[in-house]
Image 1 (tube, rainbow, N blue to C red):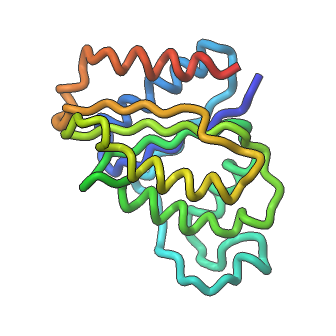
Image 2 (cartoon, rainbow, N blue to C red):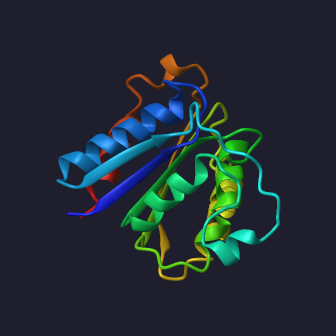
Length: 179
């Protein structure tokens, strides 16, 4: 059994990327794994100050929700990020959280596999590439980990548009494949 953390970075409850994350969670559960979904809705996540105090302390000097999220990420076997694509890039709140996770750099971590789920109004195959590149930059700082899978659901804007989309089953199956 693996411990999986799913981070839903949309700040809108029931958004397309949040719905995709929920399907991934259900797949993870169906495979018998332990899963926790962390939604950034209502979380206090401030910008990194670049002070590098985290490198000495092993945690961020800013007292907000990031240190609790980092503690869970460090102990998880699998991390899944779910983000809407805004202007062909990951959401700003996802990027801010990644920047703030700088405190993890010198620490031991359990995660090996990282997944990325993305949604966007545009449906060109190139739409999620910058978000993937940004996440890969974070993954590269953790050499025992890898980008194990991605899923892009394009052509969805209003949350009702994702209903019945075959990508929902693909998200479930991707989560179920974690063994």
